[in-house]
Figure 1 (tube, rainbow, N blue to C red):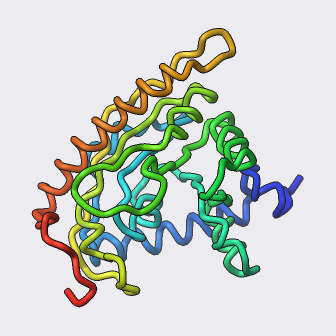
Figure 2 (figure 1 turned 180 degrees about the vertical axis):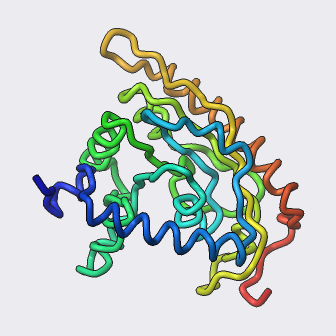
Length: 238
């Protein structure tokens, strides 16, 4: 039975039409992205071919989300800020591409439940642990949400470093530039261990610290791979 829009907003499985549009979009844009951005993934084999996994990248550009979906060999579901769902067309596009809404200014239990439903079906979920787009060469303090969701679903976490996206589309720029962009997949991080049915805070903190260190190392490697001078401020006029 086909799912309703309300169900898809809460992480329900996407229907055949959504999958058809996604496959078409993925095929069409992947070729363009390869030429325009020279975007590719290093260590793609680190993403399992099946089973639940949380992809957890650094976040420096609005390009990070669409390019992650285009370069990923598996379809990823992801959180999208609730403002993108205010119009009918915006809501339809984001849902079709696998997004569901999250309120970023408060704990959104509905979004967390949607994320867990996605993982329980064995799908891929993308979560940016810095919470929102940041600047600079240092990975900011991570939110505990990634480790929490991973622990609840007992899904491994795939840390990802992204190099070059900030130069491809920095703040203040509304059309992406042709810059080399590299995604580097790290080694899987196992989820926090459950204590009975409880998820100890110490385990959440431990995995969050491990994830922070892994993303920073991959971010450094990705920046070196693209050869961009990330210490210099990025100007909209560049």
